[in-house]
Structures are given as structure tokens and as C-alpha cells.
Length: 206
Image (cartoon, rainbow, N blue to C red; front, side):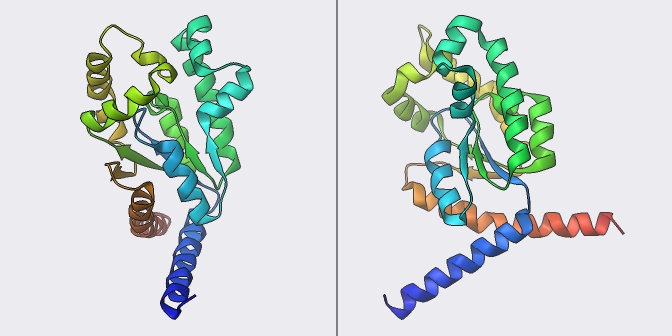
């Protein structure tokens, strides 16, 4: 390995260590619409930081013993949302970790408050056209889009949810680039946010 590569690895390790020191027991929580890449980006981000990755939807399916689509079909969305909030609250007790949440999770005020108390929220934002291309590849996994006009449904969901997603601590654009590039953007944004948050907390405690 070249000296430059070794130096890059050392810099990356130092950056990750600095982020983890500021993060403490908090989780990095990825929020945003279906199709923004929360799971794929989350796995890569967790690997770079050396902490666990947890997918809230997978944990919900494990707890319920059925798929998200089956929960929607058998019990309806309100029952699913109630279970989702309970699972995320439980998961937030086990940080640090990278936690990917479902598209509607952040709409719950109690869940937002729990994330604010025990995590750093990052909105992965994507344009409508990018989302439609990605979602069309996995239509059967998207119960909210099982409608006569999925595009119109997606536009309605974006209009409802984006103002709430914008309350996240950080916003990173999920565009059509390698996911490693988006991970790098997150890693570049985290230190300044964590440092400013730490400074604000120190000032407030005086």
C-alpha cells in the first residue's frame, strides 16, 4: 500500500474516531422517503464508523413475524405505525448505531422527540424523478404506493412529509451517484454539526 493510501486510511480512521467521541451513546438516524437509499447508505456509513447498522423495518418484521406489506394488509396502517414507534423507541436505547427508519416514521411527533433526545437525524432527500425510478424497481415492497396512480400518491406523500423531514438535524441530497459518495458527504457534514451542538450544550450548561 502506498504512503498516500496509508495516510488516507489514517485520516479516515481519525475522522471516524472524532465523530464517535462526539456521538457518545446517540444513534445516527436516517430519515426520508422510500427509495432514498437509507438501508444501502446506512450499511456503508456504519461500516465506515465501525458501529452496528440496524434497519427499523427489518426489526418490525422480526417482532411481528410477518412482512411490512402483510402488516398493512392484515392490520392497517395505524396498527403498523403504533408498532413502528415502539420498535424505534426501543432501538434508540441501544446506540451508538446507524438506524435506518421507514419513510413514515419521522412523521410521528413522539418518534421525532425520541430521535432528537437520543440521536442525530439525517434527512436523505431525493428528487421526485429519482425516487420514481428507484421505486419502480421494487413496487411490490411499497404498500403505500399500491394505488391506481403511484406517481400522484408519491407527489402527495412528498408534499406532506418534506416539511417534517426538514426538521432533521442535517440534510444530505441522495442523488444518482455512488452511495459511497453520499456516505462521504455525511461524514464530512457530521463533525461540524456535532462540534457546534457540543458547544451549544456547554454554553447552555454554564
